Structure formats: C-alpha cells, structure tokens
Length: 442
Image 1 (spheres, helix red, strand yellow):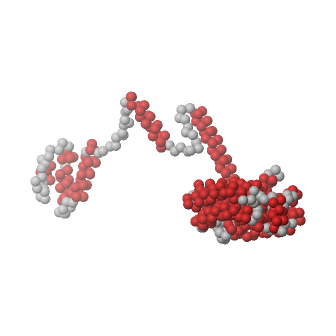
Image 2 (cartoon, rainbow, N blue to C red):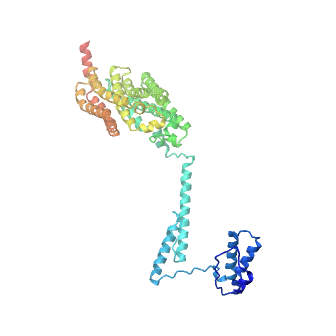
Image 3 (tube, rainbow, N blue to C red):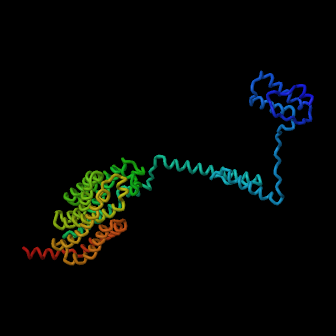
C-alpha cells in the first residue's frame, strides 16, 4: 500500500482492484504502468501497450510460464504385440518397395542368397537385352544369301507349281478328249511346253506384284517379297521358261498351239495382272486365261479349233467363277489391303450372283457335250449329281453370304473339275463311231 500511496491515485482508471502480489518487483508493476500512461502525454492507451506489457511480464518476471519443447518419448509396446508390429512394418515395406519385373526379390536374411539373386537378375537382364537385340536385328533389312539347295524350292514357289500342275492337267484333258489317235510324243511335248509357259507367266506376275503382295497375309512370304532371290534372277528364270516353252509348242507340236501359248502369257502378264488394280473385269479376263489350256491340248492333238475345243474351254471358263469367287470371299480383307479391285470387295452381291450363275451354266455345258458329238448321252446323266451339288452350294453361298458357305463351295470346286473331266473322258465317243457316222453322212 505504500507504493500505491507514493505513486498517487490514478485518475484515468476507475474500479481498479489491487491484489496482493508476493514479489516486490511485481508489486511495482502498477506504478510502472501508470508511469507509461503519464509519459504518453495523456494519450489513450492502445492494444499495443497492453500487449507489450504482457510480453514483458511473461519473459522477464515469470519465467516459469515460458514454454519449453519436451522430446517425445518412444511408445513402449507390450511384448506380446512386438512380433505383430514387426510383421506389419515388413509388409508395408514390401508394398512400397519398387520391384522390377526382370529382377527377383532379394532375400533379407543371408548375404550369400542376396549375392546369388543379384547375379541371377543380372543374367536375366543380359538375356533379355540379347533377345531384344536379336528381335531388333530380325526387323531390320538384311541381305539373304541364296543356297543352291534351296533354289529348286524357291523357283517352284515363284512359278506357283500347284497352279502350273492344274494348267498342265487341263491341257492334258483337252489332248485326251480330241477325236484322234493318241500320240505320246506330242502329248509329252504339249505338257512340257504348256508347263513352261505357265511357269513364265506366274513368275512375271509375281515380279510385277511385289509391292502389293507384301501387304497381304496370303502372299507376304513369296520369294521376291522376302528377298530370297533378286528380281533379275526372277526375270531370267521367266525368260528361260518362256522361250523354250513357246519353241516346243511351235516347232514340236504346231504353230497354232504355240500362238495360243504366247497369247496366254501376254494376256496373263500384260492384261490380267495390271487390271487387277483397275477394274473387276479382271475376273473375266482371268477366266479366259484359264480356259485356253484345254483348247491348247485339243489343238495340239488335232491341229485345228473345233467345237469340242470351245466346249472344253467353256467348261473351264464357267468353273473358274465359283472357284475364284468363293476363294476371294474369304480373302476380302487381304485384297482390300493390297489394293486389288475384286468383285468380293467392291461388288459382293454380284460376286455371289455370278458364282451361282456359272454353277448352273455347268449343267447346260455338260448337256451340250453329246449334242456337239464330243461325248455320249451318258455324260449329262452321270455328271448331273455333281453339277447339282455344286449348284446347291452356289445357291447357299448366294443366300448366306458367309465364310462357311464360301469355304464349302471352294473345296467342292477342287474335286468337281477333275471328277467332271474324268467322267467326260469315260463317256468320250470312240474314233470308230465317228468314222462310221461320217461314212453314213457321206
């Protein structure tokens, strides 16, 4: 109370309570506070003054109130939960830890196992790098060395040996159906010359279609596409087949057969091949190419173009439409990818309609054979079941328009043609019957 009496009563503050403070320095705080108020030249006390006094009181006169950072003690886990916590920590570490697919996880206990795992991971990584390098080398262009042992197989694929065999068989059928005595030497020369001409035409066809065959799954493994032989070798092989083939047909058989062979090579390489990328007319041109070999066989035996030769050519002409249209129906994606203009791609309805039309035409052509004095009347009767069956499959293909019906029609055409030609050969009129008929007419 003496300190308060010495300072005098405050004028600005009313209702002030004085507490009993234990320390003398603290007791002097009201005097200092009033002294600050007097120094302020009778200005109003602001919030800054109060805040300043509070800070001085906390830091200087009552240090027990200052906050001190106390280190946090580690939690003590019960002994029966210790293993559980350790297992959880390990599980979390395994989930967060990045694992490479090529490296196996390292074991955590022995160092030897870790060393072995590191070595095995390094070996796996080296193997993966080697495999990647090999695959990259396979994708790169590289020169292929030609082995002499592989040359016959490559040339056989270049000449489309299966198609060539079909061409030779149809020419042989035309030779056998001719109403003349069978000449073995002429038959062999005709077969060899026709086969050589077909090999030449197929080789030139593959030479022209290399950039387009590479886009098709069916033709991407051809020798010229894969680079197994050079284009110069392919052209040389075609020339070495065409020249002796036409020479054999012209000099060994007759000039008419040689002219038909040369015309067929020109028609296949210079008309049909480029037309495949221009118009669907290529199918009709290709059918003419396939109809010429039996005519060549007939002319090789007789030396003239007769009605029987045209009949055989007509049968081969009509047979090719169900055969090729059914084949191209399953290859529409390939033909469109290669840029070929086929009926199955651009005119699918016409493709099926033309196939059915020529299936029915085979029945009519078989009926014309005895009328043209090529076969007996037994041939239309015994050939009617197989002609009706292929016509039924052609109708199914026209109606369903799916891969299953087209596949059935295609496989039927593979055995229908040799069966039809064999039946025609068995029903062929003998030479004696024709001589007797000619004598009666004379």
